[in-house]
Amino acid sequence: MSDGSRDFHKPVRRPAELFDRLFAADDPAEVSRVAHSTAQALLSRVRAEPDARVIERLVAFTDRHGIDDIAELWSRSPAKTLPGALWRLYLLQLMIHHDPGTAALLYQRGRVELRSPDDLVAGAPTPAGPDELVALIDAIMRGVFDGDFAVALDRAASFCRVQASGATHLADDYERTEPDRASDLTTRALRLTDYASDLAACAALWRRDALA
Image 1 (cartoon, one colour):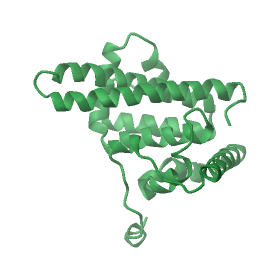
Image 2 (image 1 turned 90 degrees about the horizontal axis):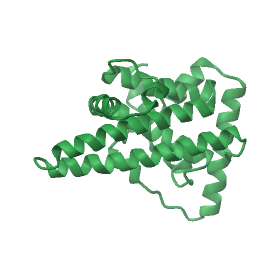
Image 3 (image 1 turned 60 degrees about the horizontal axis):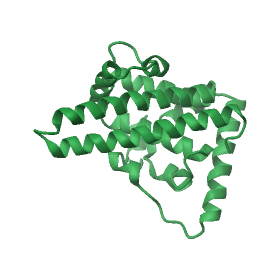
Image 4 (image 1 turned 45 degrees about the vertical axis):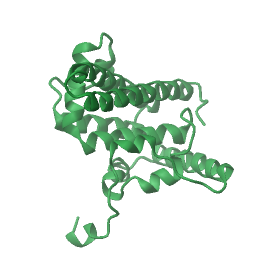
């Protein structure tokens, strides 16, 4: 990529608060229609004719263009819909890319504390440092476009559960000495837990051909 092309990229908006961001719409019904139609068209087109270059551009979309374009399409969609699932996947990827060090810390703590197969389902190597976590979330995103979509959703859900466990236990550690940090970690754990539930539900709906 040339330096000249970089100058015209939109600034990337990647704070953790994007989890809570809402975008206004004059016609909610029209926004819903566009969200569903674009999500279905994108996924069906790419999966029907997978092209490695197109897939890599979609995986790296938010790094190159920011989150606003996707948000305008999908951020208001209900959680258990195709656009809602894609929105959550991109936000999860954005969070890991924005702060891979914290992501690795949470993941390592979570895989120790969580008594479940989620670490194996997510597929992280051992140990999983910042670079490995970025590679993992990007691999999950590739699976959205050229693999089993339900498996990609399940992997993302497991990833969220491991991260949520790590955030919960670290929050407990900081409760007495750094209550503000503990509060932030607790909030993140709750968000990740919600995302895990939403993505797992979407995986089940996809397998029944009921994710619209």
